[in-house]
Image 1 (cartoon, rainbow, N blue to C red):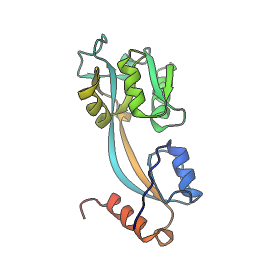
Image 2 (tube, rainbow, N blue to C red):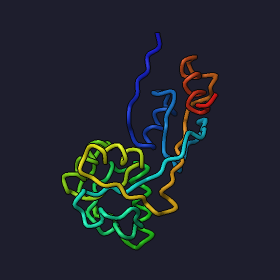
Image 3 (cartoon, rainbow, N blue to C red):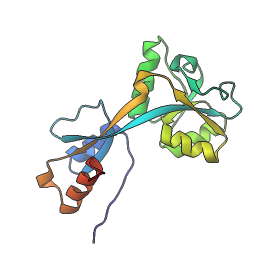
Image 4 (cartoon, rainbow, N blue to C red):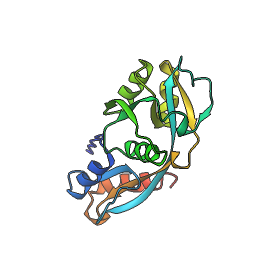
Length: 176
């Protein structure tokens, strides 16, 4: 019997959980220091902006971050990789994000955008999924930083359980 527990968290806490051996494998947004852990590439992730269907920008296909930086934002919790990316991008524009509310996951973030509390930045796959069921529109984010590298973290494979080694191999090499 193999039992897997999956817990969502922010990148720094994911790495800490793996380093502290609370979890065996973590998936995180790249760019977070990860000493003493085995790091493998996982996949690329593309970020999108989501806006309510009736928002003035909803008719556009793509958008630059400078076009939305002054809007009210629905953001993810502090310390998430998307929070760090958007905060850094706003700083490079000489601005700071006007965070109206922070959410702990993509589902509540998308629902708050639908309710008109602000705009959000989420992975394109999340935006596409929720745009089918909620009154939100996804806009391609035309920025170099909108393409994220997601990575896998673990301690050395000799320390992993057999099931975790197999899962890590599958995640790192899904075509084999």
